[in-house]
Amino acid sequence: MSASGSRLAIFGAIAANMGIAIAKFIASYFTGSSAMLSEGIHSLVDSSNGLLLLYGIKRSKRPADLNHPFGYGKEIYFWSFVVALLIFALGGGIAIYEGILHILHPEPITNIIVNYSVLGVAILFEGASLIIALRQFNGGLSIRGLLKSIRKSKDAAGFAIIIEDLGAIFGLIIALFGVLAGDLLGFAYADGIASVIIGLILTSMAVVLATETKGLLLGESLEEGEVKMVEEILNNHSGISKYGPIKSIHFGPHSVLLGVDIEFDDKYSVDELEMEILKIESEIRGSLPHIDKLYLKSKDL
Image 1 (tube, rainbow, N blue to C red):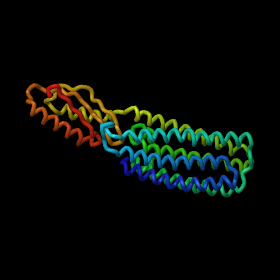
Image 2 (cartoon, helix red, strand yellow):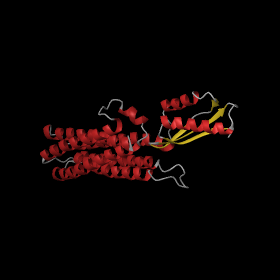
Image 3 (cartoon, one colour):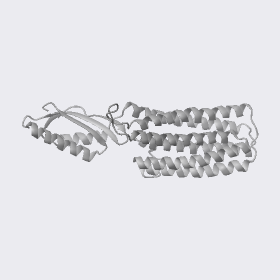
Image 4 (tube, rainbow, N blue to C red):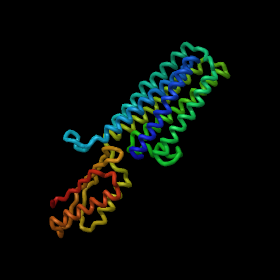
């Protein structure tokens, strides 16, 4: 997903979550539903998280300076990790707390039609937001292989929005079942139990997001297929007698540092070595344009 694609998905999520949060809080006030209150808090947290991700994208675009010679690309990974903490603490934690309170002191839900209406609209809005995020992330609507795509992706903002939207959809469905159980079966504890389950879903989503973002913060290398592309380019140059390990690290979704120690045949002069290295660099950047920091070192230079 490109930076513009990430921003589009985030703007879509913020717009959906702000409208949904207001509707949920109003519904919770008039119905007394703890699951609806938990969902309102969840949507509010998601809205603020979207703003944090936009801030992180903006900060990550700052040019390199003396203090950060490789740029600020990893800022988006830091703010994505903050988002995971907020989902865990504010979203999941408060939902579980509210659910336990309503299990200990169950209250009947009134104005049930309001809950049904808000949940139905919320599911439509969150579904639209998820569709936008999926299209920007992998160009399609298929959930199949999504976890694998997220694990391979270096776009923390992109998969953060998808994880949030998936959590929201699951939470809304659980809230709907809780309201149905209370309305149709008269089960007074259903609303509180639904709120606890929503909280557990949110904390699980937060753990997944935090785990993926942690790897990016520590520094992940190029994918295996990309490393093989670099090796193929090096192997196609007959003047290279051998080369060392290909070392790489992501400094952002579209910013990679790559370094290789190369040993050339003795037939090259210094000028020829420089020309050969420039040619190799051009081929690598042509095949993998996100490698914007490339260091090919020869012992003869």
